Image 1 (tube, helix red, strand yellow):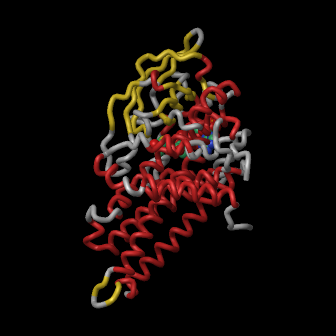
Image 2 (image 1 turned 45 degrees about the horizontal axis):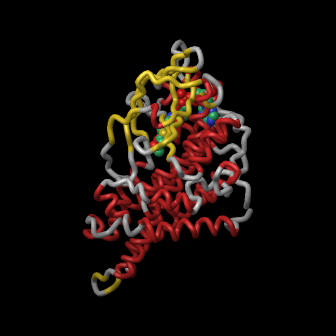
Image 3 (image 1 turned 90 degrees about the vertical axis):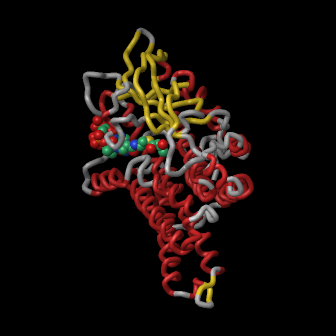
Length: 394
Ligand code: CAA
């Protein structure tokens, strides 16, 4: 067993940290306050290869491994969790499934513009009446001579109003209820209408939109994977995506810990820094321990994924623990800062608001427990998709 990052992984982590400190940290509070999507940031990430970290070089990516991508998400989310989710959905929920399930024609057509950051990606599964029960989605894809006509609506779509490429799930077989009648399509921005922007508790630098499909005609070459096997694409995608959300939660918690630790050493009460008091020491010790535990779960799940090994259970465990830990520990960070923590003078109130969503999207904590329970009780045994998304170096 080796807990050291490789030289390449450390280099990419350092690159992401430097960019985050220079371009994101100084602006994150303003983006949050103004609910502003930082359009100008993504070309800078793209220039450094951070919009396609774990995509092979032949498809326009940086050719690094999945753990490197997880390290990047952690660093970006430590600076601004809205940026973290934008890159997470773009990469693991859009670019990777096209790479994994696409034909060679689909990969070479759709992946390079995403991996080079010329376009953002979005993942459109959820609908107003289909959240945790993803297989109950109602959008339809009606078969025509040379393609399908798509009708329906989608809700809470991260990057919805900015994306150029969408992975979208619709029912191709109206007679079959549940997972079996669902197929997956690759769409362009011109196929969808953005009908509403969501106002959220946090993640204000990311966009979350409602989408409408108004009898949109798409050709046969827009079907990703096999007809009727779209639900498997969604689930396999979320298996990897959840590791990304665990990394996002980890980044947020790390940021909160960093602020709380520094504050505790500087703030004096009763004639001493509050870090001298055991009440505060124990909070910091618990934070440091739980962050470490979340990091180990997250990196292990990433390591399994990049080796093409089963990671459904491990990804769910990482997301479950990291997200609940981030919600708990960002609350503790506010407690350490006291009145200051509750104000906009310090970033910890933003971290607290941002952390909450990690317990909800890409599968709620309740769904993660369900996935873990099914796995440990031997209720689900599945083959991994055959195409490895491991990078070309390191
Ligand atoms: N990989 C591949 N295939 C899988 C799979 C996986 N991890 N999990 C299930 N499947 C397959 C099953 O093998 C089964 O296939 P067959 O029909 O061929 O046997 C099929 O999918 C149906 O499986 P289930 O019977 O287990 O399906 P279910 O209806 O019981 O649902 C669930 C399972 C785990 C509850 C699922 O619905 C789920 O994950 N729900 C949460 C949805 C979710 O995470 N949404 C996130 C939205 S995206 C988002 O949040 C992005 C963002 O903005 C950040």
